[in-house]
Image 1 (cartoon, rainbow, N blue to C red):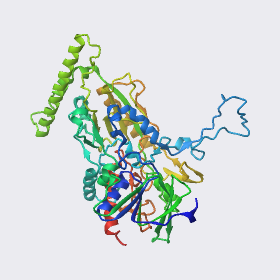
Image 2 (tube, rainbow, N blue to C red; image 1 turned 90 degrees about the vertical axis):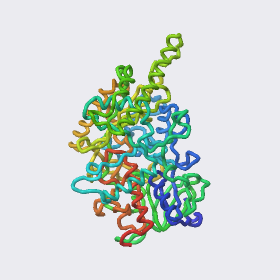
Image 3 (cartoon, rainbow, N blue to C red; image 1 turned 30 degrees about the horizontal axis):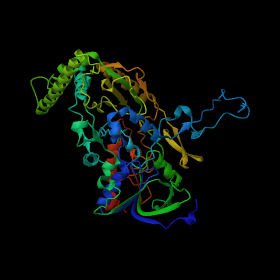
Image 4 (cartoon, one colour; image 1 turned 135 degrees about the vertical axis):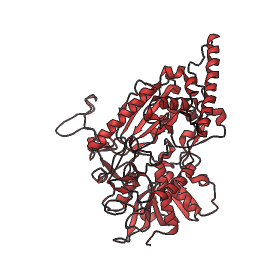
Length: 580
């Protein structure tokens, strides 16, 4: 790169690095406040609107399992331990293996500094406008106030009353809903089967999702999944001109370094050094009054490390969720008795609430649809029609989306649903209407020895310091994870049998993609990276966003809380940081 050939500096009130829902929260609110915002992302723009969920495509609405390939294609593994196993089946004339001189091929993107047993091998980043929200699950539960927003006698630096206000606004930005799937016969059947299975399932409820009905949903059963474009609102349209402030987004522009000057407690970012990935010879210095880095729980501390930030907690206190998974085929008994199960009152006892009456009416309507469909298919079958449907769910019934949320006695988050991941695709000879996914997310707690470090010798795919993980669960966490898995097995047994190939398993570490703690929020620069306003300690104009800020570990999906903390930071940027 030739710095002397760089174009003139680009000026903005705020430079936002990263275009996921958190970066877009900063952008949206700052533009609303009249600020000029420049946003950059190393990834390409994959949709007409900035950062739209790729699952909104008609094809994936019709066949969710096809979306698995999209997710895999957009995930870049962060640290792959080097395999030193020689390839002994190579043509001997093409390659000679001498164990005294050569340990084997060095494959691209492998990390020789990574120890296998402390790796998070499935941890990955998404490089695209919209970030991981281009393919996320859209689950948006709130963190439990005691289990996830407290630990070791400490609480969140942001008080509970303020967090509740921030949660309300974050849910509005993400179009949170618990009603989009509630009238589905499939959803209702799973919910009522679990409610009848025992007291431990009495709290089964709708999974909070960032999703909304589509205008044509009555004909297609399609939905609109929220993503970065939902947060941006009108700013997601590239040709939109905001009534206040200004907004510009540059895809495929990678920030490689922040130039920080000053010393002690009053340092300042002077400019960001950026590469145009369409022409890597082009180096651009972007200047702003305020800088926001929100590009992921690993790329964010990676950029700070490459910029010379030396806070002791940077990259430390890393948490990730141990996770167990299985897929269940609904039991024949449940399928045979769908109508009766749906018509069983959800009230209980002599007390019937208005909400219970409405739920019963919804279930009654679903039972009627199933009964009509079942009768129609039996009539076709008796007439010799070989295309009669053996499954009594009408094809337009939406997937189940249920949860058992974190509680004091159950410190794990349970998702009972159907969705696409890099695992668990349903084979074409199995009817997906019969399949329910169980995903149980555990919790790990912050320990300084659990960390991600960055190499001074090795570079990653984007020519940045190579991340290396050092992570393991302690004894108490392992025991709690075992208890979590037993709970998942009891849930599965209430619903049906395991689908072959998707029996209960603990997933590869890092696969939840919910790393936290690497830029944790706190009250002391010795054990945190940002203060309660998301400002980096000792750097006056640098703010961070994202899952890396969560300080205590979490079992729940973290995006909603990350958006909430970003909203808290925006207020501070607009009004001025206390003490400055």
